[in-house]
Length: 299
Image (cartoon, rainbow, N blue to C red; front, side, top):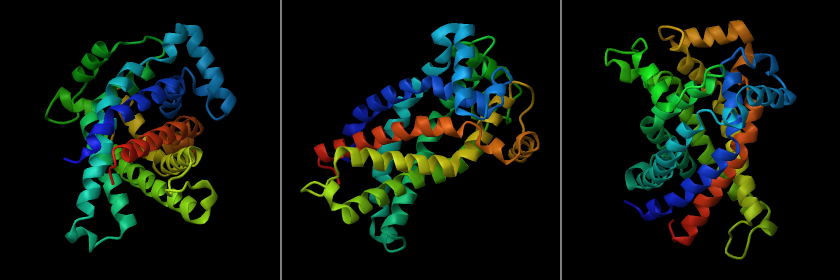
């Protein structure tokens, strides 16, 4: 195993700080994505975000804005660790003689990023499911243990039984992770390379970018990846919440339902919050990741 595993705790800590800072926005985004009737009247504008947060605060106070955030924190530790460690491992594999002759360097980065995303999501998806369902409950907040029990006792998704309920919406998640994980790492590589070669004034003597340029590269990469994969995130959220109201819906049924009720804009509900949340978080994550690699002298 490569030494990149050493840098993971630092990456995780930065992710925790970033996730906590945007937790209220994240909850509102989920409520918009699943068309929760409690805040649906506020969807569609930036001012509506603040009004939705105000409604939640009036109902449940500040803790209400962080409903479900504990599940996010529990997920971040393994998610960040697995994603960045897996990326380094898959990148090494893509550099091997057999694969390097088949794909270009950029294609290898996209492939490594996609596989790293798939790996991390597989192991942490149940916590994402819990986060979504807890965030949805505006009128009657539920804790992690109670929500876990509720999900387990719902109509099973497969013959495996209640445990399969924690993977509702997993297929569209996998479909979304490929473009998000691949595009984010690929874009970051392309943007930093552009800055280094075309705008040398922002590169230092050792060809490393200045801090603000590193952060900008990560933020732009996150914004592009978010845009590409966002419709699949909305579909995933709808399927995750669907079990609360009855048997699971298929991907096709969910896609059709969103379009009939909200049109094309329904697939991008809450995207403005996604930019506000993902851009700084991705910038911080990539910046920490790169700085620790340099500190540990990891290629």
